[in-house]
Image 1 (cartoon, rainbow, N blue to C red):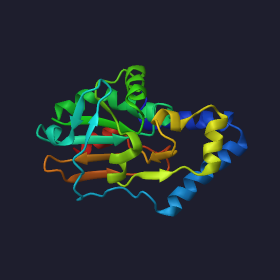
Image 2: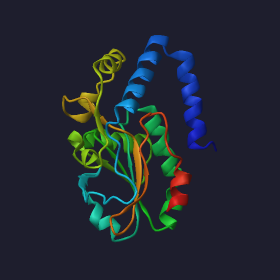
Image 3: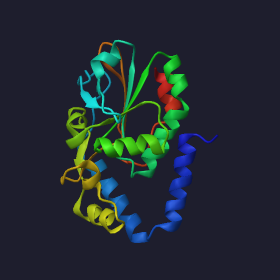
Length: 211
C-alpha cells in the first residue's frame, strides 16, 4: 500500500502531464501569492482551540468539548470532496483509523461544504469518522485558515465545471487552507500543520506519531 505522500506525488505527476501549461502556471501562481500574502497562518502549537459545534454528515451535531472528554482529537480541514488531494488524504486517514482509535483519539474532518455534499464525500470515500459541515467557514475562520480565491483561479475552476460556491451553499468563493491539528483534552493545540500549498499534506502516520 502506498503512503499518502506517494499517492500525492503520483497524482501531481499525472496532472503535470495532462493539464494545459497555462492552467498549471496560474494555479502555481495562486499558491505562490497565498504563501507570500501571509494570510490565514492558522493557529499554532500552544493556542487554545475554539470549542466548535458542527453538523455531521448524518445530521447529528458534533461538539469538540464532548469529544475532548474522551481523549485527544485530530481535526483535519479539507477544501471539499471535489479536491482530489483532499480525497487522497481522507482515504489515507480511513486506512489509519484503527491506529488512531487505539491511541484513544478521535478523528474529525471539516470542510465548508453543505451537509449533502459532506455526506456524498463520506459515502464516496467510505469514511467511518466524523465528516462535518462548516458552512460559511465559521469554524475555519476561528482557526485562521480562510482566504479568498483570486478571480483568475475562480475562472479556471468554473471553466472546468467546478462550482465551489454551489458546493459551499454561498457565493463567496472562500476556502480554508488544508490544515491538521491535534487538540489535547484541555483544549490546547499540540500539533499544527497549515500548508499554503494545497497539494502538500502531512502524512497521517506522522500525525499518529505526534499523538
